[in-house]
Amino acid sequence: MDKHIGLFGGTFNPPHIGHLIIAQEALKQLNLDEVWWMPASQPPHKKKVEDVLDEHRIEMVKNTIGNNNQFSLSLLEFERSGPSYTIDTIRLLKQRYPGTNFTFIMGGDMVHSLSSWHEIDQLNKLVQFAGVGREGFPVDHHWERYKVKHVEVPYIAISSTFIRSRYEAGENIRYFVADDVWKYIEEHQLYGKKRSS
Image 1 (cartoon, rainbow, N blue to C red):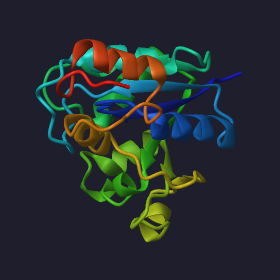
Image 2 (cartoon, one colour):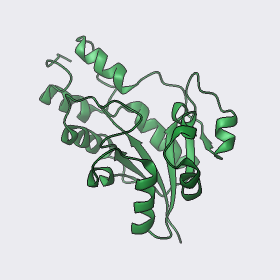
Image 3 (cartoon, rainbow, N blue to C red):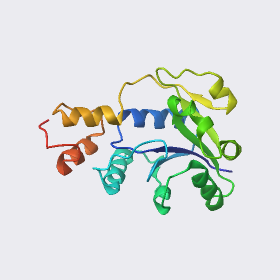
């Protein structure tokens, strides 16, 4: 029987509870066997935050997903140099895991940008897209055009940018991220000086 794998990409700088909820809901609602978390090396759609090393982002993902045996870490995007185009990632995955069905999980904002993705028409033939609705990005013709499956997730107004800003301002981020991630950020002083709990 073919495996059905969800691919959850992002900068994860840092990964937070919103990411965990999205991944878990996609796993259950789409009947996935596993969700592979794929930190982006050089995402073409986002400006990289340069002050956090890749190895820190990778360790934070490990600390986030360690308690779920249906989540795993994929470092495929770090095998290549240059921008991490999704089409290249999917082609490589198809070569390495023949017969595996892949679903690419993304936020509603990314669904609305799909028409600008590199080789999007070819990519749409190779992978199933699944989107999570976000405020300001309703399910509309963008979703229909690319046959995006909708994953219903309660709206949580937490982002990595929000967490970094809070931490830099000396405000609490505990429970916005997994406890081991909070401890890791404190220990390595990733987004500013060490804070008290």
